[in-house]
Image (cartoon, rainbow, N blue to C red):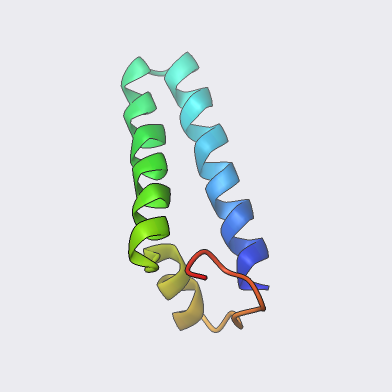
Amino acid sequence: MLNTYFRVIVGVMVLLSVVLSVYVSPNWMWFTVFIGVNLIQSAFTKWCLLETILQKLGIKKGPVSCSN
């Protein structure tokens, strides 16, 4: 279940940053870069801040998550 929430939240954040960069300011693309860097970081460190936050909110960790 955690994996599903993670993917939905990250997908919404990426789409939102692209829309904001088109309609508000190109500087919003830096938010997309930030998301990408965090995804790469979690692949190497096996730690994901969003996963930690979701677990503290009570979402159960399923068989696959961003820190596996």
